[in-house]
Length: 97
Image (tube, rainbow, N blue to C red):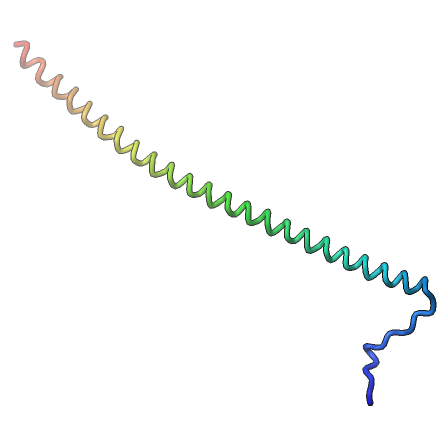
């Protein structure tokens, strides 16, 4: 029967050493829990920022569409007013003769 020497731990000589080792293990577990919680909060924050960015891009896209529609409407109104004004300036002198 062979034993793996890498898995053997030296025996603890006192209860103080045992308590210290136990506190160290609990301290390491606490650090790991803190790291896990920190990573979760970072992932949550990044997810929130991604959602907000997508919503902002969606709103910008909608406003760009609205601006394009309004631009076309005002362009058509300007052309109609230009045609009416030009027609008035051309026809008015002919009527006053």
